[in-house]
Length: 432
Image (cartoon, rainbow, N blue to C red; front, side, top):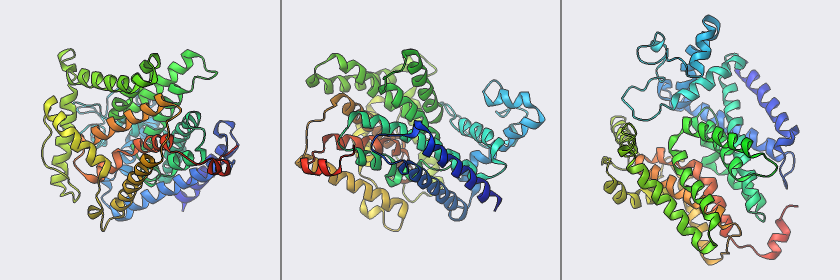
């Protein structure tokens, strides 16, 4: 009851902030729309909480609980050793790492295996520790704030989309915010909630240069990139080729711009593949193969029902190139209809896939030339690269469904950019 009371108070407070603050105003939307979307995300976060509490009952393996539970150790330092709380919070100390004096108090600060990649668990633990200061032990208060982080990020992305696609405003808003997989996996106490605010800051700062001094814009781009890097490194890896292609293509005529994006992606891909020759401690091929191999081992040991393959990815460029087409198709098409029977967590993503495929088919029949080609190419580049990375590294359908979620709003806006609408329909539904 205490949890319900405190979390409800915070939810109402943040709803009021969204309703009243000029920052959350957007052309063509009523002032009640955004608060309703935020409350929908809070409800989705609570649903996630119920699933991981009463359906998947192993708390030690539940993502919404693992980092929250670990954060209690860091939070307690605020009252026992305040200096150690702040130094560990900002990364100046490693008292919770292997060999540290508080290492036994956490299970996820240090990964249980050698990992060449950054441990992205720590940023979530730190955020939970800070939120504990105002949550008073209410878990769903954290759900409310994580949902607010995600909502804000998606709002910034939506607002950026509005600047490029002017005649599908209602559809942009609905598609960006309310795709079922997006609203489910980006609500509640998951890394995706932190990721979305990082993406929102990065995308809005990258494209929205109106009335903003260049150094402030640069600071915000770096801040957004840093949040993405600390949360999910592979998302930044997918965004960089698209961003570089976007700015280079400005120097070229529209007919050459697709080639610029392709060459930018290939060049950065080859640079990443051979980076260990220049920086011996950074081998991105090994990181990708390590992630996939470890995922396969975990899926086999846990007897995951949606395991796609047990074949290990080799840290070789040739093996990655050979497996790329299958990886892309897996991410785009799976789960297949016959793989989704008996599980709502597979059925809904399967229906989403079918919807997108039908939408693509409709666009082929009734398409137009996009008004903002460079931005559309940016979205296409990001979606394709992320789909390939997810398909290569994730051998389980459940994980694949979750990890491709950040690309879905960009896939939606790409299709809208090519979608042709009748003049009468536009006059009827366009928002002033």
